[in-house]
Image (tube, rainbow, N blue to C red):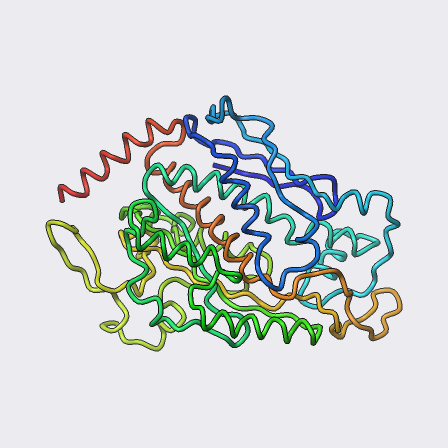
Amino acid sequence: MRFLTAGESHGEALCGIISEYPSGVKIDIDFINSELSKRQMGFGRGMRMSIESDEIKILSGLRDNITTGAPISFLIYNKDFKNWENKKVDLITNPRPGHADLSGKIKYRLSNIRDVIERSSARETAVRVAIGAFSKLFLKNFDIYVFSFVEQIGNVKINYQVLENKIHRNFNPEKNKKDFEFLSKIENSLLRCPDEDAEKKMLDLITKTIKEGNSLGGSVKVFASGLPAGLGSYIQWDLRLDGKIAKSIMSIPSVKAVSFGLGEIAGDLKGTQFHDKIYYSKKEGFYRKTNNAGGIEGGMTNGELIEIKAVIKPIPTTNIGIRTVDIKTKKETLSLKERSDVCAVPSVSVISESMLSIELVNEFQLKFGADNLEEITTNFKNYIKYIKSI
């Protein structure tokens, strides 16, 4: 499955094209729109989110809400376009440190930083969330669920004891009441945080930072449950699944680090401490009691929960500005003060789910076929039978 995105932050619409998506998949447009809505939520988001109410308009690739195998194309209209349609475009010469402004102007030889801002804006990720929703709808046919939560904002971090026994390899909110309740807690949270005490502290910190005119970063955890062992490959460097996933999540604006399982502290531990011991039972088959590897070994899924951490830098746009240089006068000045979020960590949580889902669909198609859902399902079931027979 390939995809392209197009459009500018204040253009008439964003556009997405998905090619090689399997035929026979039922598409729930309400679900896609709900995913788009989640991307816009979260305390600390900017005024733009109160203007937009993202909805998808599908132009091709479906008949009676069932995919045909033809390329899927869609639009997401920008309501703010009307406010900008006849607006004079000011010449911007004070680039923001931490943004694409200066490097983009140099690379494309643009006369105005505004042309960089319009495409490099995180608004583009709305298209990726829509494509991620298509991917989730495919994965649900195989009881594979991708979910996430906010782990940290600024210096406030959740207490993992609160989450004890809440996340497991077969996490399935449609079949397990406790899983449904845990996921609902995340979805109903202002910050997508399952720890209520930590969330209150996060909200206080964001409020304080808004008053200061500054911005905040943090980290999110992203998971995928229900995956069999053997997706991905070790035979070539570019076929390793963790490498593909890391690339996808690193492509999200403001993400500066990606790790799997206990990857952040792997260098501190000895081999017998870090590596997940292998067990076997007739009921479970091969399994682990720990998941330090984050569900991937040797570039392949190992049957455990995929667990990823993404670290998000503070947003480069601040109301107090950051020291920079005017590209025309070469004199010291303050960076552009554009309408922006103060904290977009919950949004990155949703976008990360989308990027992980996209990569998992790609691996499914490589392993089980690409053309039709029924064919892929047959091949998947045969593979599960083979695993159980080992």
